[in-house]
Image 1: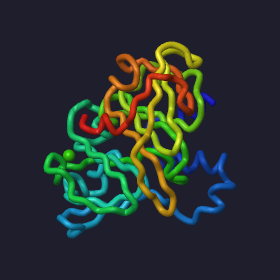
Image 2: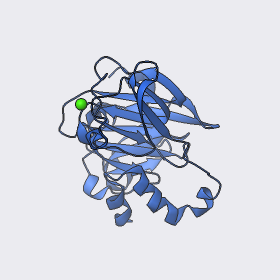
Image 3: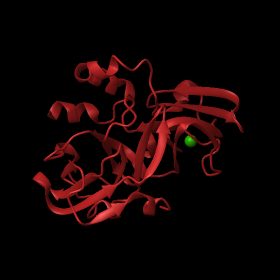
Length: 237
Ligand SMILES: [Ca+2]
């Protein structure tokens, strides 16, 4: 399963689809199209030119859409970033949008500044239980998309500085291998409808609620610690 980790890092959602096709044919057989999508608009109130995506877009400049968007409609959980490669360089604003095709204006910090966009959670089955780990705070940089227990995060060890949970299950993160060390139970406590299913969402934008200084080496589905962190209390970060 090391291969799965390698594939999961910094690949687009279409690449996830390729991987998922190998392991989830029974699920895909019942899904006609992605429940997860986003539309960017260059004008307020969904006016102007439109850019539609179901995929990760690390650089909108490649589509002649850099710094264009001022409003957005989204189904699922999406993050827009001021700079390319999901603000991997460490600077810049971000904004998280989640909904069921809901449309909003981008905040002034990001209006006409969006350069990259990606979604969180499964792009195929919106309510699939997952935790996405990010290499930097505020959901920036490389990511690891996790859908089952991991006793070791391999090259992502000690690299988690923020996280997003989707689905009904909490996740427990540990500072050592094999579910040892300091444990935190992360609880998603927001709910959004995507398609016709309810999806719980938990945003954890900084490392302070994830453990100690980004040191996470194993993750387990469910709540296995009395140290419980509720996601909604962290939204102000
Ligand atoms: Ca920009």
